[in-house]
Image (cartoon, rainbow, N blue to C red; front, side, top):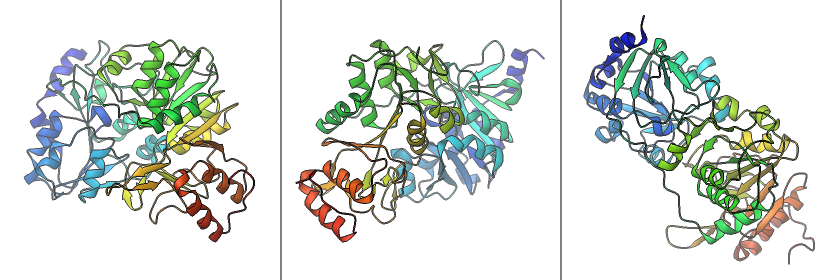
Length: 447
């Protein structure tokens, strides 16, 4: 059958499309900036007809309409692969829950576990002449999700960029059950957080470790983006990109002539990523750009893929770290913040790569709600805090007070190194706690 005729047959309204959702269903909501909008609104209008509908997605960039009409979760429940600020709010309200995972394994969860969706609905770019709808900046795990879903509904948005790749970046009309043409809202832009003095100092420490021809990964958050901005202003050249999230920092580096990927062992000349979020400038840069390679997270975040890239540089954030070298990037005690994501994959992969380096970055302190200063370097992680990167995994730790290499150190050496880059106001207390825990043996490095 002619694909245009097939398109007409499958075209319907959002209101009609969501009628296939039943009480008790698992409904996948796409990913990040391609979370459905028209379909979400139509589903919210059915709230009182439904019970125990389990929605699943990740990195929400705006509050779903279903939770505006159902703030107590009497009809809908949010299940997130990775939480943003909105996801945290839903979890705090008791209407959302995190699904622990290593992000690289996510497509496999759909293929091998009970993660089969009853309905998958997501925003896509318009169908091309061959009958394919592109996932835009959200390839991630969507091909695996759609393959397993019992019903697939695509919401077409003409403002979604067509993000090129090699595989796992689109769905053919033959695999789609219903097509909805949305109102074509522009993709939500993610604002950069303000740069602090601590951010700038940390960026300088990291950038001086990067060499020409390095392949860069930047984690989610403000700090990695600051480092990207510093790279853009540096004398570095011939850089490559292989990352989980593609952010504005990569566009800035590209336009500054720092990236060409010619020294990459694989995907030579391509900037490889799993999903993207940022400014309008970023979405325009990705659109139909053959230099940028969108791919499933099972490829981008696979430790074996990362380890095969020489001179790999992994840069990620942390919430806090303890004197044993355990990194928490997911929670504040028992309060959920984000998720494991790809941090552990990149920490392990970068260290395995030839001449690779992995950096965990965090400011030494944070300001509490009462205005007091709290150390991010703790004697032990708070009760309930999640260990994202184990003490045996962390290579470089960086704060505004310096950087230390932790691989291969004994507990007392590691403890001493970590305290050396803590805020000076907290060092004596940390030393006292370290003595109590029998992991302190002062050398001449700290006075």
